[in-house]
Length: 493
Image 1 (cartoon, one colour):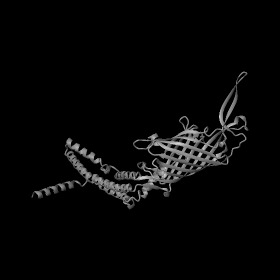
Image 2 (image 1 turned 45 degrees about the vertical axis):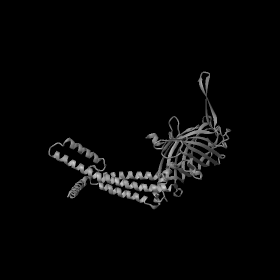
Image 3 (image 1 turned 90 degrees about the vertical axis):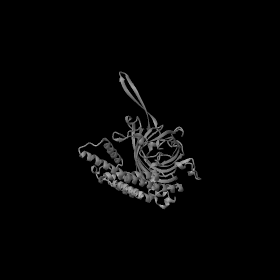
Image 4 (image 1 turned 180 degrees about the vertical axis):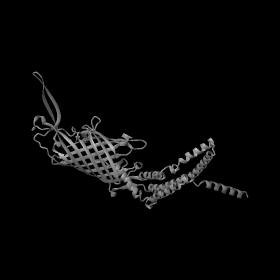
């Protein structure tokens, strides 16, 4: 008898609770969220149900595989000068001049486009235009990089890769279970409780009475708790897209989590890929000249020259992930001390001017100014320029072949080394050979590991063969400088 009474009591309690679960009409849409979420996560589940992912034969699905390399293509889209492009500002001081370069980038899958301008930086100003003309030594450029599918290679830990796939499926189950508990069970109970308190408050006010402080506190507490779900506002006060945006926000959050997990897969030991690049550059140059064949007042002047350059290149990158930097193999690219190896080979053709290869001379100008009775002043000025007397202006094309290697070390602020060599050939000059050695430094945020600033100390030996016959040794003509690259976010945000 006692057992029957207990069962009846339990049944009545269950029926009482179930009587509270149906939601008020304006809050009855949480089931749409759950249905939409299950459909969305079901599509993600199909990705990781791939047998090749489960048994470790493959690490990433095709979509994530392409996204992974697309991300790296934009990150390591190096210009021929050895520093990364992208949305950035570059300040490059050296013993000759200081240059300021601004670059904007656009990425579309396996293609990256860059465009920008570069100018001399003086007195905290980089003038791009002077009156109606482009300022001297100013350049405008655009470039692109293309990543072929056949060049992508990933080396990964198969056991860790298959375990990561299982972990993602478990995470999906956990997300759906948590959502059901929150937006079905908990949400139904809380909204039903809020509806009862709302009815009680309205009934007391309809009778011309004032609700007790305790009832009002319980009512506002229940309302705030219900609003914390983010989907239970009175739909009548919002447009039809309100609820859809709530569901889409939840989907986007889940997608970001799985994108981050997939693209930062800790089973990746190393990867490598090759890509092709091309660029176009316009540069305005002015040459200060002296011409002894023209009237005296016009002998010193400027000769403008508009240069066009086209570049095509092949690039290769090997990168070892931080977790596996202690992993060593037999080949050069598998050495423990090597984190990254970058190689590029380029061909450049540019419009050339014979004045650009002539040595500058000191030009002394003298002017006599009357100073009064029986007196005069002798004014002198000195500048550097090119003596073009009896030397007509001749233009042609300069062909340059260049190679560059960047070696990045593991676990060090001493980022690595930059080695480069190029050779130029043209009708107007003897062969020009230039080499460069740079030391790269990287300073990163200790929490995010993102670079706060990268810079390079470099030594450049231009025109090793002294094609201009300057009479100076190669070491006397050396250039020592610093390239510093700062992300936009560090400047404006």
